[in-house]
Amino acid sequence: MSRIALVSAMHEELAAVLARMPDEQKVVVAGREFWVGHWHGHEVVAVLSRIGKVAAATTATVLIERFGVNRMVFTGVAGGLAAQAHVGDVVLATELIQHDMDASPLFPRHEVPLTGMTRYPTDPTLTAALRSAVPQALQDVVAHLPRSEWLGLDLDKARVHEGLVISGDRFVATTAESTALQRELPDALAVEMECAAMAQVCHDYGVPLAAVRTISDRADDAAHVDFPKFIQTIASRYSVAVLDRLLAQLPV
Image 1 (tube, rainbow, N blue to C red):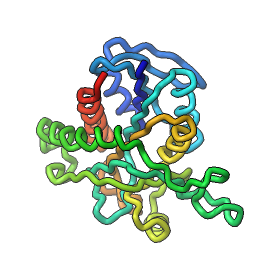
Image 2: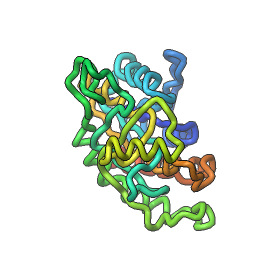
Image 3: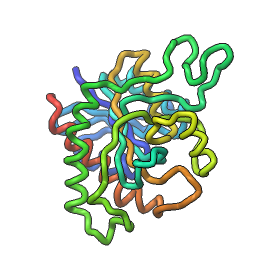
Image 4: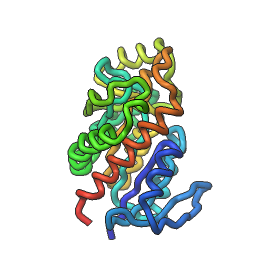
């Protein structure tokens, strides 16, 4: 049996996903609401990741142990770190790292103790499927979203980036923090709070993981857009469109 986990970061994203699952049924485990149903003929389990590495790791573990998922796809938002990662762009993760993992001098900085691993790769097959789905999804959203709802962004110029996404248990929202992370991990495209922990769990269980993040801010002192409006108007639409395209093309 193939069962795919659809993990969302925000309530608005999850609501949009559930609207595409006509037969969803709620199951509560570990204080979390897991929604089991179908989408494009696939058995899926939709859930919020919760915020932070431990919460996200718990969610991932329950998905595998209790629901038997054998593929996991994460959608959410992130702060842009690389100069080319603009608000409204999308980052497709190919590697994930915990930027606040530091067990030195016992282990090298960023290395997860006793694993020998620093960077966790996302699954190449799922990531390749997303590579095809994401540009099409963005075109769909931009084509149907009135320009008055673009929040001042040039969404027709939105780009898709691929590379390193970093996770940590703090919300990066100052220029000083952002600059320090850029200096420490110069190839990092974006920063968030969940995916590297989920990647560690998925690696331990041998479950493929793919992750896509919409850039909602520049992880600095400036407020570029109204965050709640961005989530509701743009990010949640991106996420559901990406998943719709992805599931439509994956073999059942």
